[in-house]
Structures are given as structure tokens and as C-alpha cells.
Length: 216
Length: 109
Image 1 (tube, chains in turn cyan, blue):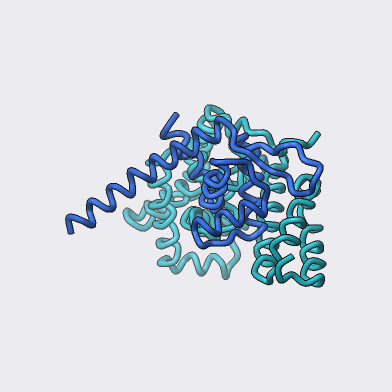
Image 2: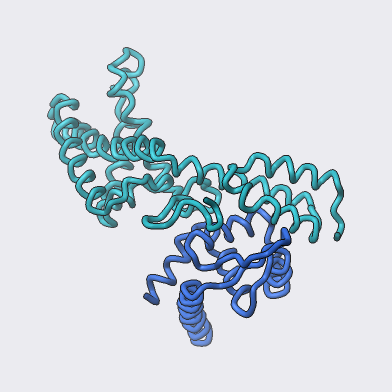
């Protein structure tokens, strides 16, 4: 044993208890043996805790219900964007004050249908947490989506009526578009940053067993 | 297969680099976790933490690029599978091409 203290090993055991059960069944004793052999420094305990968070997120992301709800949410976020942008742009540029809900509904329905078709074709209705745009949109569509989302946010911020809308109280659904766009833009922009916990590397690729070998 | 295999390793996200190091470590002979960390530390000067190491091992095992060997000891050894060898070879080829391009550009400048 090299430089470990029993107290740190106890902490390691506590952290290991927070790992998913299937992971513990398979790897817990190996990790403890590793720490006993090589020592358990504070940095290693931190790394163990970080691995625990990743394993937990990974497990949660594999629950079919969570995947389905997540996929629907991602589709909704992606679908409402174009409708919102077009409605805003028309009113701002040419003064058409068409009811946003009408345009938004039609466009969202078209985009939604397209996305569902793509999702079914790719047989990938498991949500890519960090980057839903790349699961349901092709590369050029994803690029267009970024521009649209950015434009929408800019227009919304530049429009005083949006602030009035918040003050006077428009229907909740309408007010949800801005945070939805901001959220999806944020998710898309941060998808490949290393510190972004929920990213595509943690999701299960198609046709890969969900449990490690050796588990019944 | 080559390009696809090389990219599939990159699909492991933040675990792609530790996974590559684990594959390289197992390329010559089977090793258990501690032996892998020692080997990787000697190779790169970088010590993988237990969470990172076993995060990578779990992902590699799921993809059947490595497999555990039977052991009564808690220190279970792993070995590279045939698929793992192909993935590692493809990744190293890709890295070699990148290194070559980088070095030639540096030489030109």
C-alpha cells in the first residue's frame, strides 16, 4: 500500500455507494483493490466522485421513459423556434402583425413532422442530451437552427413589446418561447465542451448492450 | 472500417483519451486496473484517477473492445479483443496522419 489512509478509503467506499448498483456489482471491488494498491489521494477521491456523477447521468439517460420525454422536449424546443423567428421577423421587417400562434403552429407542425421522420429513419429516439440538434437535424439544418435561434433571441431582446408582454401577462405558452430558445441555443453551443456533463459520449449508441459483460 | 473505427473511439466524449490509453496499455498483454494506471503513468506521465479509468473500462467493455479474464482475485485483468485491436490500429493510424501533417507544416514555417 502506498500512502493511503484508512480514512480516505472509508471516504472512497462512501462515494462508491453512490454509484449505480449495476456499476457497483461489476466494478466496486476492483476499484477498492486499485485504491488499496496505489493509495487514495484527495485528487483520486475527487475523480471517483466525478466518475460517480457521470455514471449516474449515464444510467438516468438510459431509462426509456426519460429518453422519450427528453426526445419530445428536444423536438419541441427545436420545432417552436422557426415559427417564433418567422413571426417576429415578419412583424419587425415588413410590419405584418400576423398572429404569431397561427404561423408558429403551422411551421412547428411542419418542422415537427420532418424531425419525427428523421428520427424514425435513423431509429434513434434516444435523446442525445447535450446536442439534440445533431440527433434530429442534419449538419446544415443544425447550422440554420443556430442562426434562427440567435436571431430570435436578438429580436426578442430588441423588442420592447416583449417586455410589455411579460409585464401585462400574455399566455404562458407564448412567454415560454424565449427561455426555450435560449436553453436550446445554450445546449447546442455547449455540447462539446469538456465540462458539459451531459454530452453525447454518455448516451448509449444504437445496438450496444446497456450492461457490461458479466452481469446477468 | 478504418475511418469509422477511428471515429468510434472519438465518440466516447471526455473518455476518449483515457480509453485510448487503456487500449494502448492492453495492446501487449492483459493487465488489471492498477497495472494499467502504472503503465499509463510510465507512458505519458499522467496518472488516471479511478473514476476516469473505470469509466473508460466500462465503456470499452460495453463495446466489446476489451474483455475481462477469469480471476478469483479482486484484481481482474482485462485483455484487448480483436475488434479492440482494429479500433486501436485505426485510431493510431489517424493520429499518425495528423502528427505527420503537423510536423511537415511546422517544418515549412
